[in-house]
Image (cartoon, rainbow, N blue to C red; front, side, top):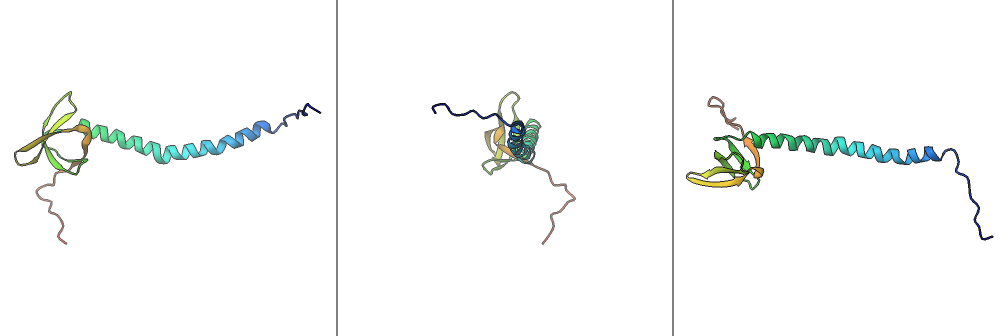
Length: 112
């Protein structure tokens, strides 16, 4: 007996393949809605934040430096910021992580 017998594939073979792929599709769907989609939304908001930079904005850099924008250069990926009185440096737009909202004059911080 040198030849092994061939077995016919049963009718449930196609259904078994679908039941093996379904969990993988479910896992991908969960990852997309819990991880990928929120990250894309956050990146889109950050790009909009960087596009709307203007002179006088107080910003936070990725290095933890709080600065005030003194010059926005169009067409260049650099922004000039003032980190201390009369100390100006150029930073890359991508290193700006957040913009601080100005505090209104009539709003006082809560005393604790």
